[in-house]
Length: 458
Picture 1 (cartoon, one colour):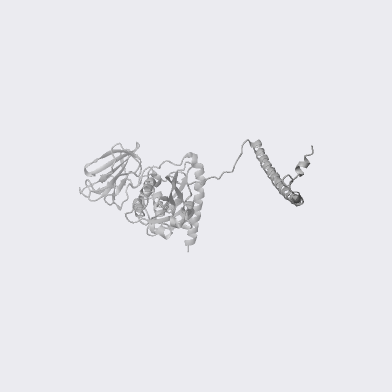
Picture 2 (tube, one colour):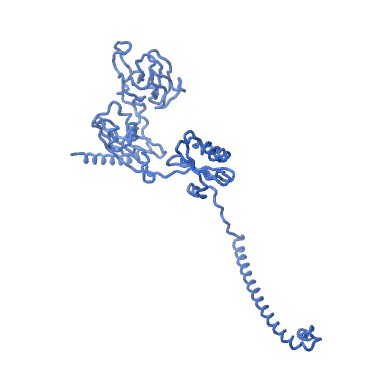
């Protein structure tokens, strides 16, 4: 059958012979236009199909190799920002600065700035992390970031020059974090000769009073700085200074020192062992600390020494079996060493008295107290330097002072001159390392001394 005749026959115009030539020409144009459009559409569909096929092929390859499709996901930023990031959050208008005034508390600051009281309660409920906020001082500042509803979003507080607190909102609660500034440690040294006093010599050498006091504490077991210092005594010290952003903010520890007192040289080296314990030792590894304090009280003067004397009240000659230290009423009295309280009572002429047993051989007595330290009782174990009472004039006494006795096997000895036993020396497992460290430090000290002599010799 000839289907071509059906496609070519114009059924619509078959009954109008006059229109046939015109319609034939129009039909040819339309066919060409339709054919062109159809060709373009075919090309678009073909390329689209190829692109889809390529994508399907790529996905199939991924599935065949890994068994799963991995899609890139955006990782949400942590809500807990660093201090620097937190302070940069928001616009300057979001942050308010509140200065602590006299009598202020954080609660008063929140009230003054119309901040949410429940936010304050949550912040203070963080416990030890925000306990410092209860100790604010006049002149300090808080920086607080709030939202449009005046709800706290972040709170920043400088606890000290080196430590800051940042409290941030995290959803419906708060989190606190602390930031510590990095401190630069520099090593410094000084040598000085005493002309009038230890502190004057220290100041002339550029030392702070705190470093000079540390020198006295380190060598105070061997030298009585109230009685033994003489003009011409000399010391050399190597110590640390702390710097923040290029400015000195304080002193650190003494690393090594030598003190020459009345021609006798005393040396001390600071050593921190592998267990992170620090102490001062002689170059041989003996502890600079002794088992007993040389003087158990900060005193003005020695009002009566060990030995025979005329009693100021009884007016007769008798043996004075201790040393009297004149001091202000109420001055703390410290236990000379570790031990156990064996006497706490009013003993006639001694007044309020405490006796402490130190091991098997040694005992100490403290008399004429104004009052006992609360918690001290017979059988109580005390540590060296622990306060046990206060200077007074109870018993037979002409004024406030401490009467102090030192006994060895029950026999009274002169507390000012007795050779005190050393505390525990450096551990044997650290001694080899310490000796090397001590020798290097003493080489430095000797070099500084020689330089001082060269610069001060006419």
